[in-house]
Length: 463
Ligand SMILES: *[C@@H]1O[C@H](CO)[C@@H](O)[C@H](O)[C@H]1NC(C)=O
Ligand SMILES: *[C@@H]1O[C@H](CO)[C@@H](O)[C@H](O)[C@H]1NC(C)=O
Ligand SMILES: *[C@@H]1O[C@H](CO)[C@@H](O)[C@H](O)[C@H]1NC(C)=O
Ligand SMILES: *[C@@H]1O[C@H](CO)[C@@H](O)[C@H](O)[C@H]1NC(C)=O
Ligand SMILES: *[C@@H]1O[C@H](CO)[C@@H](O)[C@H](O)[C@H]1NC(C)=O
Ligand SMILES: *[C@@H]1O[C@H](CO)[C@@H](O)[C@H](O)[C@H]1NC(C)=O
Ligand SMILES: *[C@@H]1O[C@H](CO)[C@@H](O)[C@H](O)[C@H]1NC(C)=O
Ligand SMILES: *[C@@H]1O[C@H](CO)[C@@H](O)[C@H](O)[C@H]1NC(C)=O
Ligand SMILES: *[C@@H]1O[C@H](CO)[C@@H](O)[C@H](O)[C@H]1NC(C)=O
Image (cartoon, rainbow, N blue to C red; front, side, top):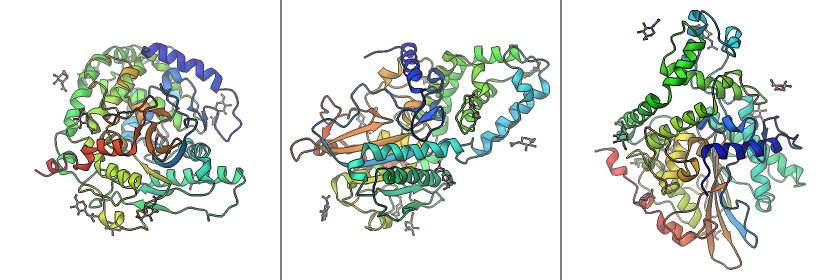
């Protein structure tokens, strides 16, 4: 199926009208358990990794196939919506201050800036972001209710506050859904969450840091170069429009990106996810370019566009293999052999696992798993194909509260099949003879993960 960007946006808009009817579940007006964020989808689904989670249209029916029984689920979730990082929040604050100081008049639609006060914090989950994770726990419970009534996932979270808190909020939603389903409260709450430090010197498969040539090498340059070319194509007319409407402000290209960032960040700073006024300064096309700009950051920073990107996801993929096959971890990259060698901190043979991490790490993990490997490399100067034919964009893969489900299922025989969903979209498996539903047999899937099994290019980290 080949939609254009625009017809896809129209499709989403149609769905949005339906989704904005009052929902019966605990949710904010723009966000719901089942479909995620659905206000102004024609723009809000194009905010790159700053889009709030929304259910992504799946070419393959994403429901559990009839006649099949899910036997195992590994979830990997991004933390919920947060404030800007500390350095970005300073930049945004000073950008707003500079505009207010030097602008001599405000064009139509720009008047609100005069009274706008910058109040965003730094790094922490927002109230809206907490609710996203609560909702994610509810949603997971209902999809996998058969297991989830009687067994708890084994939980791990990477050590940064917003990730750990996201895991906690997820368990709150999961627990409440469990109680609401009439489950007796047999498991003491709060549940245990294994926290793995992100501090220097720690091996953490959910937070990259060990691979010297990746951390200190030319990687930032690779992604910045690709983004710089795209900026030179996409931004000039937008910057010119801002300068026309904010005479005297002398806004630069980088400031234009900051001003666009203010839209998603002010939106998720609102507990209801109400669309920020900043969003209205930009057109749908502007946002398509923005989504592409952020997709370049992920693709050339942590995925196939970066020589050492996918390697950062190898440790996690080898842990996934261990869990899928009920056998000990075989990895020589970022796993911690003490943790992974103990049944207390890396139990095998369980049906449910839930891990919590970051967008960049998840991007590397998806790539080490071979997901999206069939898509053409992202061009640095044009959005040459649609999101569908690429199958890849930052907003579809790692929005706030993104979640991957790796499922094993049996369908009438003992043979186990594997399937992967990213934000409710089935991502057909590569190189293992996937069937029409995107699934491979467990054996074929494991055999296809040669990149991870051979430690990726880890040897190139230290040469
Ligand atoms: C923004 O910058 C001003 C001036 O430096 C400072 O007083 C204010 O606290 C900052 N606001 C935020 C929310 O960071
Ligand atoms: C999220 O967790 C925090 C702290 O654990 C709690 O204060 C907050 O109420 C939770 N929010 C939701 C929506 O569960
Ligand atoms: C591995 O995990 C153990 C147990 O938590 C911890 O004591 C140790 O510092 C960790 N080592 C590395 C290199 O991460
Ligand atoms: C941009 O893409 C072109 C075509 O693939 C490539 O030759 C060029 O090196 C790229 N430039 C940068 C700076 O990434
Ligand atoms: C705008 O900024 C540019 C570069 O920062 C500078 O060269 C130029 O003089 C400025 N123009 C005005 C009108 O302030
Ligand atoms: C969000 O917008 C609705 C409708 O305009 C309004 O009633 C509500 O108070 C707003 N919520 C917040 C938290 O600002
Ligand atoms: C941590 O990772 C390094 C690099 O691969 C490895 O040499 C070391 O043995 C690992 N430490 C543990 C405790 O697994
Ligand atoms: C996993 O392996 C262990 C020991 O090797 C075995 O006791 C257990 O039944 C297995 N679990 C599953 C779910 O296959
Ligand atoms: C991606 O596909 C290429 C070509 O089929 C293959 O060489 C490579 O190993 C794959 N990468 C991963 C991580 O699966």
